Length: 315
Image (cartoon, rainbow, N blue to C red; front, side, top):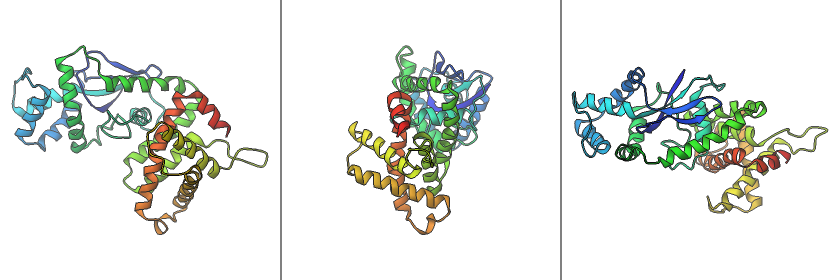
């Protein structure tokens, strides 16, 4: 059995199935699992004042209808740990970090309206900071309170996550795709947790290459070389993004392709250790801000638009 906490805090009357292939569900902790989650809530509680704890409990239970036994801290720990949503799998995942990598892969292309962080929805409980928990709570408690008041109501954001994750079952059952997505999931996790902006850019580039660059040209091959594939395919995805009105069109097609050529050159410099002396952090941040949403849309297109995948693999 494999468990990992999400950044959701909701009372779930029934488990939510994310993957039939890996038998992954979202649910609240069982009684024997509560101590694991209570320990993290206890660390958060120690950093809050009584006033802040009361405010959080009042947000969760505006009518005050919760079991008020024990001290304020004990109530705080008990109530929040019981509605913490965890990801549970009975099958070992092939990813390096299991459920954590799965969370980054399946949550990565969300529009960000329901996720505490832009990289994924599952975290490593050993590395979740009190600050991350508090940020998640502030976003989740109004929704949790609504779910407590109306148990039968639909939870739109988790329903959207369930629908998005369901697309992956078909991909995971096909070994050629699975071999590609294993390193991709790891790259996404490494990029998210890496505070070095240079290494973050490198991981985003690696993830983009895994998705879009295939069979680079050789002596007897008509395919484009890697740098041209990288630039042309990312520029194509960028134009799809603009067409869907997800971003303003600030570049002509030629300028956009040239931009991703430059980005690939930066990636080569990073690989050879020359980047620190040739480009500023401001420019690196600009590259990431362009690449990150393009990569997210690339992931979405890969699993939701088979015709696009077939087309882009032929370029």
